[in-house]
Length: 65
Image (cartoon, rainbow, N blue to C red; front, side, top):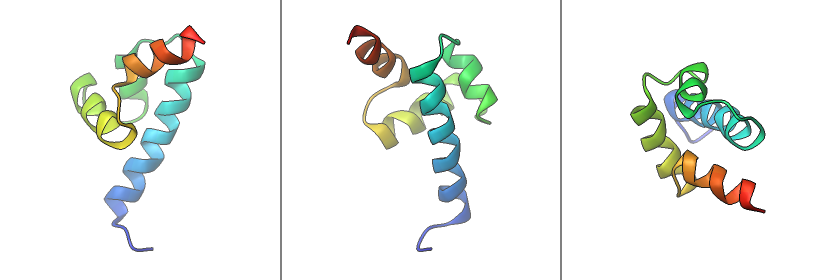
């Protein structure tokens, strides 16, 4: 409610991808394509907008702990 179908689906895809970025060693491009994004750059742009950091940077932060 209060959001478009596109925004809702985008959030679902980003949530799925977030789990993969944090919990797997899969390549970011593979994660992007598996989550339904057209390319690595398309995924990274939306990921950065939503989470405030690119996926590769978030992975570095999480694995450094």
